[in-house]
Length: 159
Ligand code: HEM
Image 1: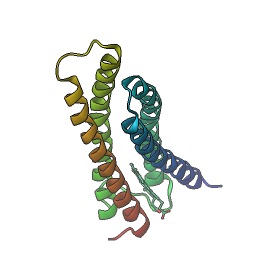
Image 2: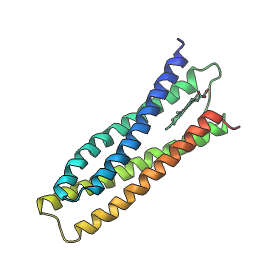
Image 3: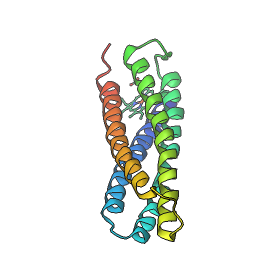
């Protein structure tokens, strides 16, 4: 097996990790939203946090193996050699950046839910949680759309 094959293999493993974190996050968010009691919501949040910690690992694996794919193949790529790759990289940066932004907002929501469950939340905390919940929904849709566009670009490689 050539180094480029190893790099591609790791790239596909990273792809699986990213898809898993998005789908698992989506399913767990659904369970969290359906839970009636705030104490039950805190339990779902614990699982969501574990999944959330996995996503930066997936992003890092994609980045490192992607650099491997660019440099180890028979025809080396550069940042601007292929339009599909340049577009993919821009979308990848957006994907990672929105992940960081919404990850931080998710963390804020989690803290509020814990405080509501403990009875120590400030006034208006429940509305704030509901607003952050709605944002998280859009976040999952955005991440999935970005990921699908990146995937199609990588497979079709339009010039
Ligand atoms: C979520 C992000 C990403 C996804 C979903 C993704 C997906 C894929 C897929 C499915 C392939 C295989 C295409 C094929 O074998 O025909 C591929 C190849 C490749 N990817 Fe990515 N990738 C991502 C991120 C990156 C990044 C960050 C880089 C660069 C730093 C990169 C660079 C490459 C290169 C150079 C190839 C090899 C193309 C070839 O010569 O066949 N990818 N990617």
